[in-house]
Amino acid sequence: MIEELLEPGTVAVETFGDEPGALADLFPEEALLVEGAQAGRRGEFATVRRCAHEALGKLGAEPAPILRDPKGAPRWPAGFVGAMTHCEGYRAAVVAPADRAAAIGIDAEPNRPLRSAGVAELVTVEAERAWLPSLAARRPDVQWERLVFSAKESVYKVWYPLTGRWLDFEDAEITVDPAWSTFRARLLVPGPVVGGVRLDTFHGSWLVRDGLIVTAITIPAPTPALAAPGPSAGRWAGDDPTVGGA
Image (cartoon, rainbow, N blue to C red):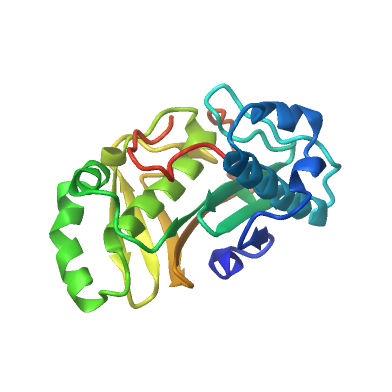
């Protein structure tokens, strides 16, 4: 499913539930990251790591643990970029060679309302709240506030590896094209520099299927002629149970 949203050269592996035996496949260093966690958390962690290892293997990467940096983001093997996501009934990992993509962001959410109006207010900005009712009236099959939440999760997952900084929900404004199933994220803070060019907008795509909302963004790698040293690799300050590190 998620491969429909990805650029050429990107590899995705997904599953619609936790896989038996995935815990046993974890590297010891990975198993330590969820030692003492509840069984459900260990299962989703192990399954999404299995997806990531399989995707990396398809690109020829040597088997290695995928650990976390101090802020909880996945540490991908040298020469690769990627992203992982998990929600009820879905786990996925997407990876690409670093010479094809500068960063990848993916997110999956249940196509259900956010927990409360308070959460919706937290994750949206005024400009988004202006267009949400009209789309809800036109397409009641899509939970648009949840889609905005998912899009901002994907925004964060490409932002962080390029900046190493926190990004709040209020720091990006999403507009959605329902005809083409795309979205635009306008950054309301100075954007990252990629290949010597400052990015103030990210472009992504989305789909709604089988009770899920899935979003994805790929930032292309700069061409060698444009490549220039940039910053190294926050976390959305959300209040929803689906928010969290992989």
